[in-house]
Amino acid sequence: MRYLVDNGIKWRAMPGDFPPWDRVYAFIRRWRDHLLVQEFHDRLRTRIRERLGRHAEPSAGVIDSQSVKADAVVGSDSRGFDGGKLVNGRKRHVVADTLGLLLGVMVTAADVGDRAAAQVLLRQVADVHHQLELVWADGGYTGPLVAHCLSALALVLAIVKRSDDQKGFVVLPKRWIVERLFAHLMRTRRLARDYERRTTSAEAMIYWSMILLMTRRLARPHPQRA
Image 1 (tube, one colour):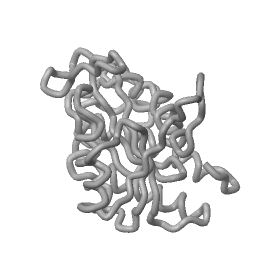
Image 2 (cartoon, rainbow, N blue to C red; image 1 turned 135 degrees about the vertical axis):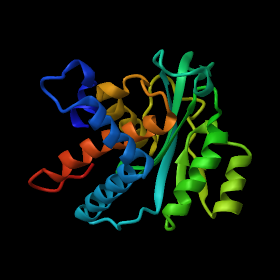
Image 3 (cartoon, rainbow, N blue to C red; image 1 turned 135 degrees about the horizontal axis):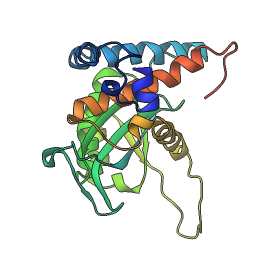
């Protein structure tokens, strides 16, 4: 999986160097369908948080989305056009902790609104991370979602807005955390665009990308802050 995700290789094109592609993909599907990839990922995240002196369960996070172009194998049932970003493909909705580690991800068609996806994703994340109390978001998440999170999820959704008098590029508080996560995803060649037929496979690839990041951090001789 390291070679597949990090380098974006075509496994079938390398029959002499790697195990048979059908066996490898059978294991990938098994790990995906039984949520073993996510479990492996979550255990690594816990180890990193504890190594840095943090509580295993986060109390705050950041939510955002990223639209990416989809390959030709992605069907019309799971792809769309993001008019704001002018991207025909899919959208990755993620929640990260304050260290920039992934708490949850949901892949949808690119024309799915951020607030509609966030309502589902935040419920999934809140059901797993019971100590989560605060989530920062950009202006695209304003509206009824703020009240919904407070009443239904006991979660404060804090909107980080850009000041009207700011010009040019400005690093907004907390928003850079999730932007850095997206930057890491784009460095793994398999995620430079969406090549997966199923959205569950696309989500699994994102978890694998973060697994690569976390294993490298755990291999460092001394703990370093993210």
